[in-house]
Length: 262
Image 1 (cartoon, rainbow, N blue to C red):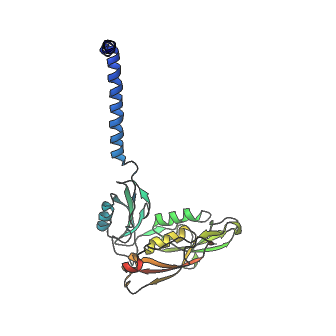
Image 2 (cartoon, rainbow, N blue to C red; image 1 turned 45 degrees about the vertical axis):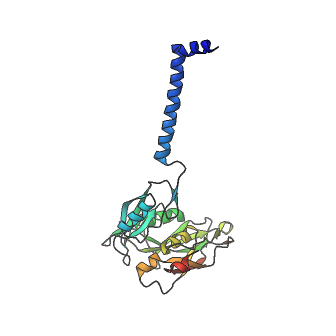
Image 3 (cartoon, rainbow, N blue to C red; image 1 turned 90 degrees about the vertical axis):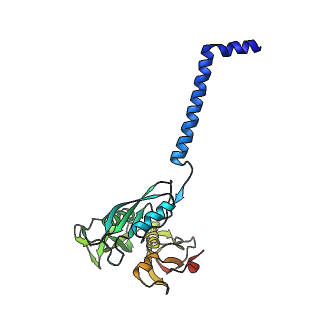
């Protein structure tokens, strides 16, 4: 039996086949290990909140989480520190692969003008994206009865309708008049505890809600402080019960770590 086995293994065809199989197994194993290291398979990191940070600090914060940053645009916001991060993509809290680049829009040194886009008849989500791309700020969401919920009916600037193509400074606030169908008029209040000011406002708009009030405690003394302030309470709270779109939410913010801790 031993001689027969030795004879078979000594056959050059069998030996080459075995070597070929072994080579394929080793190749697949090495490729699997390489891809696992390359893509860090199964590993994700949470995107940190970089808004209001300087570009240097944002880069350091991202690096500490295994991420990178790239500046893709700039806007002008009068009361915000020059060079500070205005917005980011992916948003804070998103789950991404290590090594992902976070695209930043920063505050420019001098104001610039942009053309008002035509938002009429587009969805709230698309209108929000177009305003953000132009460096304009989404303001109040005003709902009126209509067949299509969250369909933009009018675009407003300082209380008056604004025509597409009108030149505005970046950072200008645009209010929207939106449709609301009674059969599709409900949304939910998100839990905003621990969110920074701008991120909290963004989350409310994503849920078709408004900011009805902002209350900063005595730790917040400047506009820069307000951008770094964190929500420690909200009214109404996130109960999980549906509420009508356009409902206002009051936010209470602080820089006090003890107050804002869970």
